[in-house]
Amino acid sequence: YFVRELTGVGIAIYMTVFVVMYFLNRSGEFVAGGWFYYLSWMGFLSAMFHSVTWFGVTMKVTPFDLPKWVEKLGFISILLIWGGVSYVLMSTFYDLAHTYINYA
Image (tube, helix red, strand yellow):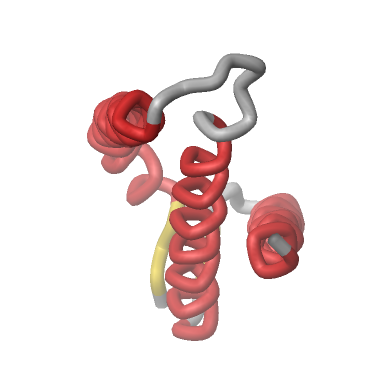
């Protein structure tokens, strides 16, 4: 539980750094060094761990007494929906992000 909440704090720090760096750059082009690449991977892995563990808990805290197979089916369903939405968003905004971010 503690690690999951700590990853949430890490994600908030990552997003704060991203937003501050973007607005400090007056030209609108975000220049990121190698450190930001590693920070992005750490933020991504933290977000993955945070989300997957929350999805696992979601089916266990319902007010219904669900059988284990229903909990697992719900967990898998949530993961598939999350993966599909993430894929659509990433493929939609991938080119947009690379337009504004210049990895120096």
